[in-house]
Length: 272
Image (cartoon, rainbow, N blue to C red; front, side, top):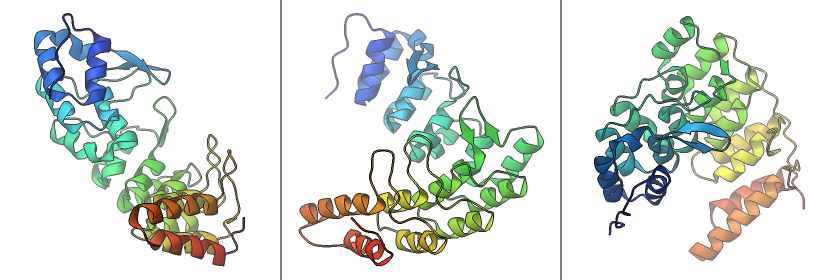
C-alpha cells in the first residue's frame, strides 16, 4: 500500500520514501517535483548523494528503476566522486547489472567488479588509478569482492598491491581460486582491516559454509593464519562461527554446515 504523499514534498521526505522502498509514492513525488531528482544530501560525511544514490545504497531495485525512468542521472557523482554504480558495488552488488542496463557508464571500478578485462585495461591505459583515494577504491579489492578472476589477474599484472584488502574480499566471496592467486602474489594472510580488525579468516567464516568457505579456511590456515586472532571488539573467527551456528540450530532445529565449519576451526587449533 502506497504512502500518502505529504502536502509539500521535500528532499528529506523523498529520501524517507526512498528508504522505505515506496516506489509508487516516489514516482508520484518526482512527477510532481522533478527538481528533486537532482536534490542532494549528506551520507557518512560525503555530500552530493542524490535520491538515486540513496535508493541504490538501500538495495531498492524498483525505486532505482522509477528514478532513472523519471530522469535521474545514473552518472551523478557525490562530493568524493562516487556514482550510483560505485555505491552498488559496495552496498548492493545485485544492482550493478541493473544500473549498467539502465545506461550507467562502466568505469574502472565497475569493470573490475564485472570482470570486464578489456574495458578495465582501456581505463587503466587511459590513466585510471589502481587506487582512487577520493572515491575510496582499491580496484584489486573490488575485483576480489566480485569474484572477478580475469580483472584480478590483470590488476596484479599492472602492479596492484595485494595487501590492500583483496585477500579478505576474496575470502568473503568464498573464492579459493582467488585466495590462492593473492597468496601467491604475496598477500599477508594475517592482515587486519584498519577499521574493524577483521582478517581474511574472519571474513571467510562470516560468509558461512555455502560454496567453498571450508576450502578457503583450510587455505588460510595452511598459509599461516592465526585462528585465534580477534577483531577490534574481541571476536575470534570461532566466536563468529559459533554464534552463526547457534542461530542456525535455533532456526532449523538441527546442526548443519555451520557447525561443521566450527569443528574445522577447532581442529585447526581455535580455542575459547
